[in-house]
Structure formats: structure tokens, C-alpha cells
Image 1 (tube, rainbow, N blue to C red):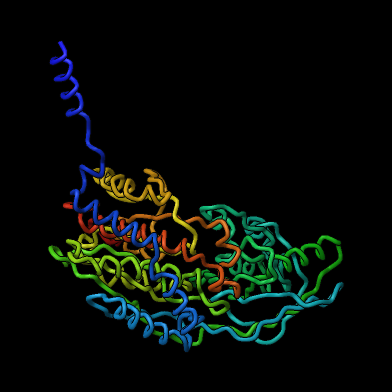
Image 2: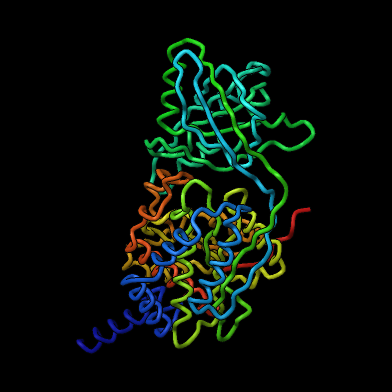
Length: 471
């Protein structure tokens, strides 16, 4: 009887499915991934890379004098870190310049306001004056009658809500991206918005707008963001019921075309070098701060992760490609250029992931891969669990710079960062090195090293396949 019980128990054990990690990867793969995880989490080069970029280059708005210095820095840093191949690919875009910017309440309570011009905004061609008309949100502005803002300045007052995953950004940012054209369509001379941010500092948040295109598009008007305290101040004035008259003087505009470069470093695969796992961040920043969290941290995290994989005695089967993308801030130009240049190689891009949500710790792994490869993603999630990262089988999305290549059919992964305080500093003068916790960067390097290495080691892919181009 005992023999039969033991035999039945053995049969039951043998019939149980293996853990996902055991099914998807060899013991050597898992051992190496755990080694990379623990090594990086114990200390990585990421903080030193962020310090180097923010100190030696600083603000690096696309097309500025600092832009080519940032490109040269990235090439030198890839080589210093030991990448096998380093090269650049050109990226062209409109050249936008910011000059002086001032806002002042003329009546009934004269005082200055703190503003920053929105990226790609036109200038005011000297001072302009108008009565302020406040709107609760973009929808309220859109509902205003045609001509109701003739000779006036529109003000959108809605405030962004705080959350770990940044879900308040989407509903709020529409005011920045589309507000100027909506206001102009109603006759406005200019647009002011409450900054798209969650802080209470008297530092306005910049960011790009998008004017409506086409023959029937309304005239382009200047647009700027108020700091949150100044938006409160202006709202309080309007609420008192007397006409609030404002003067704006904005010197800004597109002054031609410029070219920068995606900077690419690659660790060459040992068996299928033509197939790549893509990770990266964007090299450019806005001009107000030093771009530490947006996105020197993302560049540093992925550079450091790639370099650690490159230091292994045995290279991964596939190549690890790290990209410092050009001009993300003004329209995802680097990501779009990369997708266009590599559109015939989509199936060779096994998986892509981007770090562009600050420097907070990663808490979740999500992915956009074929259903058949979800067990492999789950297996990677098991290796990430000791870092406090949970695999979530639903949700997520590709990083901004890989939206275009993902849209062409590349499988993607997301290592979701805690962005609870990200929008306190995002696009402001307060985006500086002191906001970064080196230990949090190490945790992120560990996660990207595990993800990239194991993705490069899989026998199959994750479902990348070129999609037909739209006619």
C-alpha cells in the first residue's frame, strides 16, 4: 500500500506544470539574470551617469547650443562603458527658440505673474493686452460661442490630479496641447493655462503645444503656462467679479529647421546579432532645469543596464541596443525617425522598452506581446519579484519614443515606475539632480538588465511582426 501511495505521489508531482521561469529559460539563463539583478541592485553606474550629463551638459533643448554637446557626451559615454558599437542617426525637426516672457496683471490688482512659454508657441510680437476669461477646463473653452473671446485672453484653470501611475496627466494635458487653437477659434488673442503639474511651487511647467493644421485652422496665438500658485492667484482675481486685465509679452517662435541625432550603443549578440532587444531613454530636455528626471535618469538606467550585460563573460544570444533618443520633448521626433529608418527590420526587434517616467522605483512589469509569449513575460516577472516588482498581465503601454516602432509591430514591455512626485518637477526649473535617489536608480538598472538579458536569451520572440503601412 505504501509503495502504491508513493508511486501515486510521484506521478502527481511529475504531472504538475513547471514554474514559468523553468519552462521558458535554462538554469544558466536564470542564474545569470539573478546575478545581474543582485549586482545592479547592490550598486550601479546610473547615478554617476546622471550626474555627468546634468553637470557636464546641463539643459539640452533640441536645437540649442547644448544639443550637439549632449550628442558628443552620449557617444563618449557609450564608448567609456564598453559598448561594442556606437553610432548616430540623424533626426530633423522645426527649430524653436524661447526668448523673454512676461505676464502682468494691469487691473484691478496690479502685480506680476510667473509664466513659461509653451514649446512651439508663436510670440506676441510685442506686448498685448486683454481681459481674462477663465474656463474650468478645455471642454468649457470648446463650448464657448464663436467670437465670444474677441480681443480677450483665455485662461484654462483645471488642475492635474496626483497618482502613482500618472493617470491624471492625460486628461489635464489636453489643455496644453490643444488649448491655443481652441481659444484662437473663439477669437482669443492669447492663451494661459494652469501648469500641467501636481506641485505647489511658484515654478511653471513648460511642454509642447500642437496648433491645428490645415487651410481652415485658426490663427496661431501665443500660449504660456502659469505656475500653480499664480493660477490660483489669477482665479481668485477673476472670482471677485471685476474685469481682470492682463499684459503679455512673449518672444518665441520657430526659426527654421535643425538636425540632431539618435545616439545608439549596442552590445553584440553571440548567436543572432541581427536580432535586437531595444531599451533607452531620451537625451534632450527642456531648457528650464537640467533634465535630471526627464530624462537623464532614463538614459543612465538603460546605459548602465546595457553595460552590465556587456561585461558578462558570455554575451547574450541577441544584441542589446540602447538608444538615447533625440528631441522627444517637442514631438517624439527621435522615436519617429528611428521607426522610419528601421521599418524593414521590425521583426528583428524582439522586444522594446523605454525609461521615461522619472527616477522612482519600478513596481510593475507589463507587456504588449503575443498571447503565446505571455508565459515568457511571466517568467521574467518571477526573476523581478525580489526587487518588489509585480507582473501585471493587463494594461500598460510602450514608452513615448517607442510608440512609433511599436505601432509598426514591435512587441514592447513596460517597467512601470512610481511617479507619485514626478509631476512636481516635470518640465520645470526644479528638474535637477537633487531629486534623484541613487538606490532607486540601482533598482531600475537591475530590472532593465534582467528584462533585456532574458529577452535576448529566449528561443523564440515576443510576437514582433511588421504591420502593413496605412495608405
